[in-house]
Image (tube, rainbow, N blue to C red; front, top):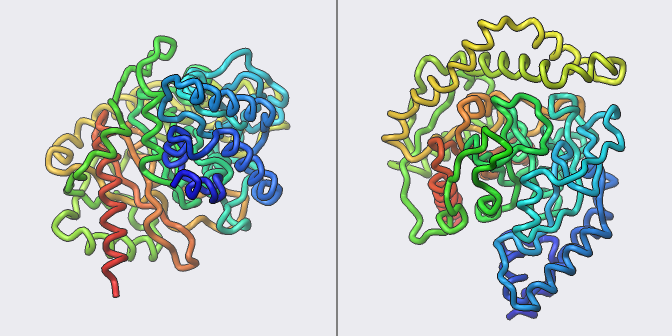
Length: 452
């Protein structure tokens, strides 16, 4: 059986399955890493998902993972799994260039806290994936693996595209508005943004600390549940205080839960494409008694505006020096953001911050009745053209509230490109959210099998 499993191209394996085969001795971590590097060689000239790759160290780390298994030492859930890291996250030995020529060649002295935890969990760091400029809206070079003439989304464009193209089975991104969930939707992979405060941000570009959150990309729910290996409080990041529990074990629990889902269109439903609206109506039909239309409190109509206020003010404060020193090398959208942020009145900024807790608390009655919110991940398919990263509006509310969210590639648009279905959970209930996501994937698969 082990020999049969190992005959397929290892680069096509999901992260969870690859880790299982490595632990079972059916696959070598070095063989998996070399297969991923070969896939990068064959595809990245077209897709442009990577900005820096450390081949020699990646193979060395993979060989060390194989040696550890051969010695009979304990293995973690990410043991031997190749990982791509967004290029606003420090990894020792690799530049952190933040998507701007201003930081070209900048090398950190040490790993970001989450990269250190990845290495301790047995992951193999392959390299740095492309980010939009300073994790904002000006796109990098990455193209969508399903159609190179379309955006992969952003700002975690390289991480989403690398997983979708089979270059790595697992990748790390960040989200300040919609930068994990949206590119995962456009690229047709599973994207997971944990509850705010679950993953340390030490060693990550500080854009808007009240909003900045870490996220993950994989091919299955089980893949992104591996992120639980690196979660937990961190003394160097005061905002990282949450321990959401054993995500992998809970998301794989049998029998799966039978949840009740609240279909929430949000105040921005008019921005959803026709295929998205139709897809969600069909999804409600599949769910039957387990899916119910629900309304958000009226305060949510202003949530996206409050997020924009906080993001502009904090990014101007933390990143405005790029414009002050190198304005001619920064994009017009970023220069405009800094100008806008510097014009935000303190009273408006503080009032917007206050609404984060108000909005989160106002959802408690909904989560007392429902296990998760069901809502679009993006308005529709990835837009044509490479000058935009797409509209994050269906992510804004949940990012602002710091709630855990996961997108699943369950729908398709009129061009056959993926459309993500987003599930949002109660704060701190990440394991329950992933268990619910797994159930939804199984329900949709069963419906397809039952369709004549």
